[in-house]
Length: 531
Image 1 (cartoon, rainbow, N blue to C red):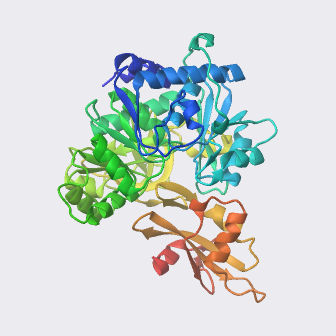
Image 2 (cartoon, rainbow, N blue to C red):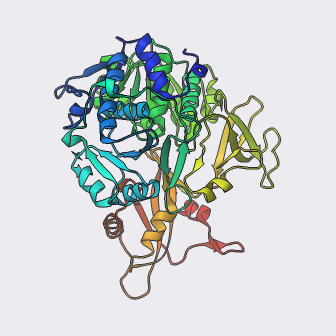
Image 3 (cartoon, rainbow, N blue to C red):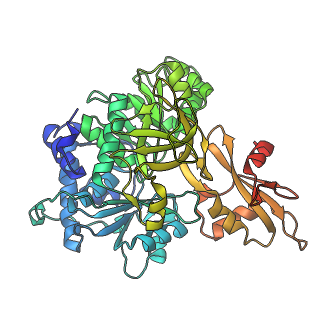
């Protein structure tokens, strides 16, 4: 593997790999045909429907340079804040790498988000540019961005094409310093998303941790079937650049189509989250005439973002005939712990692995002292992959302890073998398909509905999603009657909430269980009632 200490930036890693593996494939593009992505990729960004397009490491570097030159002509310079909301396309990676070459501050936003979330990110980050795909899968992203953007933000649509230019107009590359070059917005216990600031070096450290734990080599073929705007996107591409392996790219995850593409390209590593493991397992079980493993070349499934039930671990490994390697990370620290293909079944089924290269984990008691071996407490972490802080200084001040360790808000313990076990969460968030959903954000919106007297939003175990969103409601006085799921989801859609945050279950109760000195809602009781 490439010696990571020799680079200080993502772009230097791109240049290294393009020189070392110029003609080796980087992307097997299996995405749906999308207007506008062609222009970004350099005039031929997608193949025809049903066909795959291969891009080499050298081609990706060169296309990123031409796009960087075009964006430089628009005025994008080091430190310019650029929000991009794009599907998982090779063209998206090219766009991001072009911005990295220019030293811009990137603000990736999930393509799932709508006006409420996009508008908040644009305003809070003071983004000067927003890059969107135009219309895709029935949604007009350009119209949403223009409606949500302040007057000072210039919206660029891939449907109109992005500028290309001769690369000799680019100034020499200057590696970014210790100031943040990435802002990721994540939901947490607060109603508004939090802006997480990262440097290039932090993301590089995360990619090193991932590649080292999984033993990635140039002989592997990976896959990117999760939202690239998630912090795992650049992390995975960094692992590709470090190790020199290609990946199949899917912008829409359909298990049957994904399996066909993975078999076609000989994928050795797949995954994304617990929901992906379950989807592949279901696909394997539903075959009419099974003949060998679902993907014969697959050596491992890997992912994180949600708990991995031991029974799913054993079933997936047995039926898919591959290792199942789960890990633990978050937007604030993309890689914290990770299993390896060399761990035992017991370790892989019941832990999230050991701290990755460079990460230091400490378990702390409520008084801030360090817990003893096997003693549960809050998981805190330090290392080069930890975020710089939040865009809100007040949040940064409370996120780190006196020794500089980041407080994850998760509960766990370190075993004698060095493996981390997660036991719960201090934060009131729901992890649905690997994405954090703020319960408070949904509660704040629902309380304004005239049929809702009181409400608590909880996460319930779900076989496919990890957790599903459940709203527990007491009806308002006044004769409107108990609100239905359809009524509440329609109301939330009208308030601009993204579909992935909508409740999938509504329960009506006479009163919410409360207790303690502050008379807080006892959500653990509600989970016991409705799980």
